[in-house]
Image 1: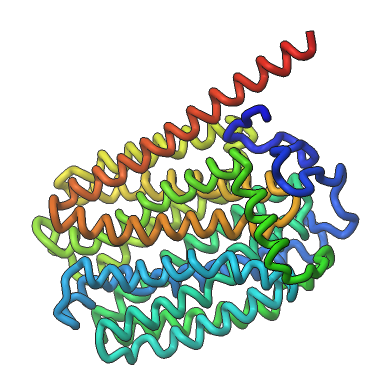
Image 2 (image 1 turned 45 degrees about the vertical axis):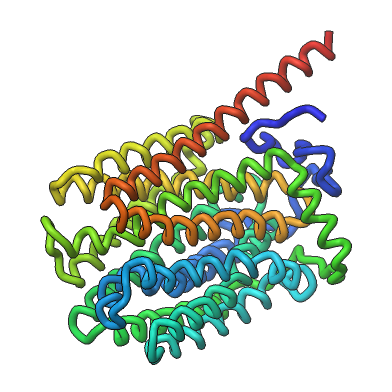
Length: 434
């Protein structure tokens, strides 16, 4: 079997890997698929944007509050970081089984139930009596949210015309960035005025509003076909995806990007609250306005791919992230903030490119393909948050940056390997044609 590159097939009908089940894709789009400017596309975009806001606002609701939670419960940064890592880790573990349920009961139903349960748990989180209960509730919340990301990617792959898929997924990822930003900014200022428990309650109410908008706006699926819940069929589909070298590389890239992002944004609050910055909680929360940069870069991912190709866009994203990490080592606040801008822009661009490549590469079992990507992605977040806190405790901000640079080097190595595989495949095809 010839190797394939890190770049997704150029056309929807291209073959990804012979080992993937039912690798042949239809040559045209479904007659009722959504297109930009067409009926239902704007409602779909707004609904999934709202879902993205709610997902990231809830998933990372404690991240900007970690110094306050550490002080409130008298625990270390490492223990407090588990309020983030438990949520992302549980999401990573449950995303695959819940995506399988979406194959049977529908993407729209799964997303609705997942968001409703996560919002309900979010309203209980502020009342946690100790760190152990808080971590347990956060794990439950992450498990509930697991039904949303992969189902959303599969919904888009089925309902949106292939040529518009990167842009549509970019808008969903943009909603993630806005949710991550708004939840943290809101939490920071509310915490400064009324404490971290009130801040978590405010994030929960924001998520309630987003969940209502999502349910009212999302169009019904027109291209979904229910499938049976056969464990053997699920294992075959998952095995087929894991046997595809292109998908494996994309999963690794998503996970490594998230190691960087999880480490940086879990620890940044501890750095900014200490010398030489001594920033108050509200200002630290406002630092997450930098997520707006991610909204722009993720939405622009489609244009980057058109100009540079998928591997070129990944190289640009990873270079931007590495530059931001190095710049953040400065002792001046302006340089640190500019470093965060570059890290955020590079991360969201890379994530959009990798996740959309997964959706285009998988021609069957798209929910499972997206679920495996989400598992790797959120395992990276969980590992990055915990390891970033440990590195910060051991060696300060420089230790966290070193961890991030190691993950960046991993992305570069995987992408270079994909480029070499592509050249080898082209030479083999040329030789066979002679």
